[in-house]
Image (cartoon, rainbow, N blue to C red; front, side, top):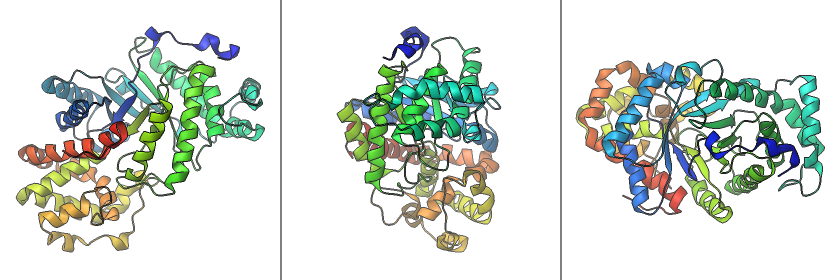
Length: 430
């Protein structure tokens, strides 16, 4: 460890730790916790282990009309009823100083989002101090990858203010939560271009100086991570960046004094089937961990479960699609950077109205290699949970009435399509 960072080493009692693998599952309506735990129990039966992290953002709470207290209660009840004895967390997802307060009593995982301050110029004295502090990276062999002066300048001008804001937010949380009672993630993925591995190393120098005990960090990776569909881009390019950045976070734990177990987080990580095999191989080779966020995909499995049940369930699924089709601009606006929908490829509500259960399910369900899934329809349904929220008890009562079908799909999707490939390196099915 560099002498500059010895004083920043945290005692084990100061921080709460994640396991090597952790999965952000989400649960839009707070009804699928036991089915999700069933997937983690199944993973354990096959020799794997992962922490379950129920994440929900301020935006999603506002859209649905739920609260962090509701989120925490649903998670606790699912743990109690299922008998789960593994680690579990409730994530205040994508919070800032503006939104954190109502999460504080109920969450033990805080994803600090600094998107609003990326690109803002840091104060001159802070910039100068950072460049001096980070200059050791320019020496050959100081980091796992070469770092140039231009990398330090980019971080100083584009990301330093964001890290300073993250430090302020972390200290605000830490002043209001007991030591060792929560986990911190830093979200830096909502920016116009991917960070390079060298820039990530330079960012982590700033993080260490702010004394933020990160458990995970979510950089912007190459390619596109769109809601509910596979990775768009060159998998080889992503995996090269992922491996280099994994080496950087492992280095940061020892060289910068950041917490042991620091790992990368992949946001909008559900359904990225073309990447999971390579990710598993890299983390296995390096002995690294991973945090993967798959939150919205559970909501889609609720819709699939309703459609599978037929009758009233299928009618509700079709109604949600028809309403979403009419309100597409409204629904996609908050997710403009993570959905790409070609309206011309969307089936008309009239066409969908004539579909039987199997046709609807095949269009919406995403199996690896599926040629029947309609990506535009799936992305639209991914952001259409607002419609279900507006339906109130009509929707939630239907989910309860068809619980067996819904739960089976939720568990299968989480275990077979996500947990098994990432943690076990397999594509085992239920």
